[in-house]
Image: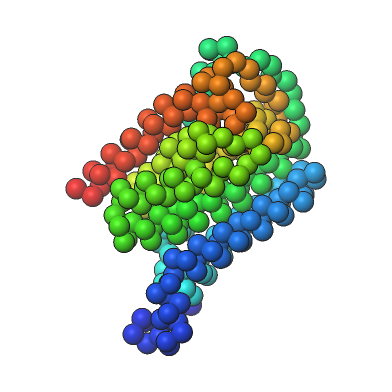
Length: 280
């Protein structure tokens, strides 16, 4: 394992770098996230290539976060990515994320919002798995690993939860079919739920799995465009929604539906209650 000097033994340059750890980490990882998104777009037409590329980018994202944390923050250990919590966190997170989105689609179906379901593409299903793995890793290390974690240290859990959730939502405002309400809904559902997952477990594996499970089920299983994207994913199924926006989320997709808020509120409250009990 690499060993790093104590803060007192740092050079002036390293001390300044550590003092400005938040902007350095956030900007570097944000640029990496955009670069990974560009790579995913390039390989998307080749699903069998998109799977290993996406998984490779996910591994690279974790390794890059570890290295940046060590160099910029002078941390010998990165407990939020502890190996002993990896598979349990990823597994449970993925399972819960899958279940939550399935419940959302079933509720929309019950109220008549599903117009058509047909078979899609198994290879597309695999390619989306790779892409969503890299998306989940990069968004979680950026918004929960850097933004939430450091802001919580400085301003407390409540402020960190509110600010990180809103900023997470607003990053989706630039999507092709984005709406202000859709971006706000993403912040209130995904942003708050992922932050609660981090607070309850104090590791990034569980929110990464939760994020992946939700997005992959959204696009890879049901073939519904994610977060106002203009591209209809070639998932295992092709699902067409119709009806009022209050039911289906309109052009932004089901994440903008109030039903999504209600469904995501349940695990969010349970996770925050677990975190409060752990602290007391």
